[in-house]
Image (cartoon, rainbow, N blue to C red; front, side, top):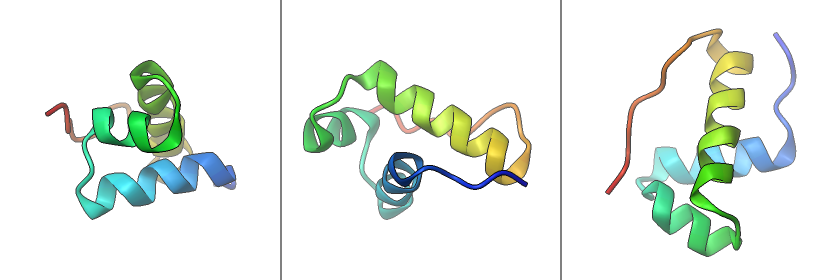
Length: 57
């Protein structure tokens, strides 16, 4: 299993805390697409899955 980057961990932690992708983007001053990308990479690295739970509010 590959190690998560600091940003991937940060985005994943915020998601697990209940933040939406839009809220994470605003909080971290990144785009929503960047949030999606970090979540996707973290998912592949952490669990080897191809999908993640959607939190698109």
